[in-house]
Amino acid sequence: MSGTPLCCSCMSKAPVYLDTSSKLSYCDKCFLEHVYKKTVKTIKHYQMLQPNDKIMLALSGGKDSITLTDIMGRISKRMNGIQLFAVTIDEGVETEKGSYRTEAISFARSVAEKYSIPYKVYSYKQLFGENLSRYVDAKAYSGSACSVCGVFRRRALNLAAKELGATKIATGHNKDDEAQTFLMNVLRGDLERIIRSNNENPEFIPRIKPLKRLFEREIAMYAYLRGYNFQTNECPFSQETVRDKMRVLLEQSNTFISGVYDALLNLQDELIQQLNKDRSTINHCRSCGGPTSPKREICKACEYKQALEVLGTLN
Ligand code: SF4
Image 1: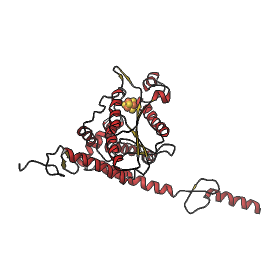
Image 2 (image 1 turned 30 degrees about the vertical axis):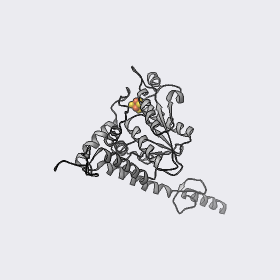
Image 3 (image 1 turned 90 degrees about the vertical axis):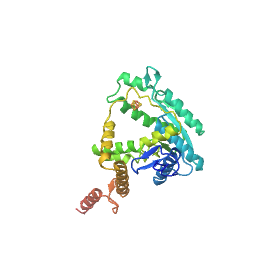
Image 4 (image 1 turned 60 degrees about the vertical axis):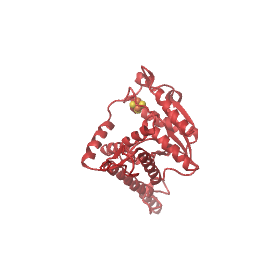
């Protein structure tokens, strides 16, 4: 019927998703293909995968990590030489209905099985001696439960990746998460965190974020259209954070500055590139090992010291 909107790609089916940035609408099948292709483009752009990579998927059982596992499972079938395994970290958060992660673990296990990806659960109790609930009850730290949990999760993923021999850890961070983090770091003036957001401490297994250029709503739609169940219950320790305020700020900004999310992520990429360039030009002094400018063999301080020693021998 004339006037009925059609999918921008196949031009034959009714659309189910409107991409508000490009104003293009997709039917279910073309939308799934569109998201897959966008992820592959991100992986290529950031050179996230190399042949023989062993990728550990951080699979919490939420929509982002379920989508990540589905797309990586499809990629691994088409790309020879990469090996996948998936890990859920069980924080040990007790609720009235039992452990907060139990349901998520069943969703996570099911998507891993679909792609024959080896799957394992690691718990804070097993790795750090106690459940998160126990740490919270004991008030053994200052700060929120989430700050402790974040530190433990990062460490737990790294320990798991080392034990499993992973070359990289893939996480399900999306475009909203990434823009919020960058904005938070800018507003705090935290240059070191901006640099580290892409370049982990060498002690840690490198991380990749294949979904970082997909909006959270695109990921939710992808998981829904693929028919996945994913965790929706909220952790009892979750509370309003600065990140929530960044979310609101960005959503509002995007109504009067179009493309604000991509603009921020592009700026972050450029900054990291420039800063890494400057860092790589740092030279080390042959005498004391400290930093010196690129064309110098020894630093100015050692030069002065040596000059003084020479003067001493002359006198
Ligand atoms: Fe951990 Fe906080 Fe998330 Fe709960 S809401 S799982 S405490 S980071």
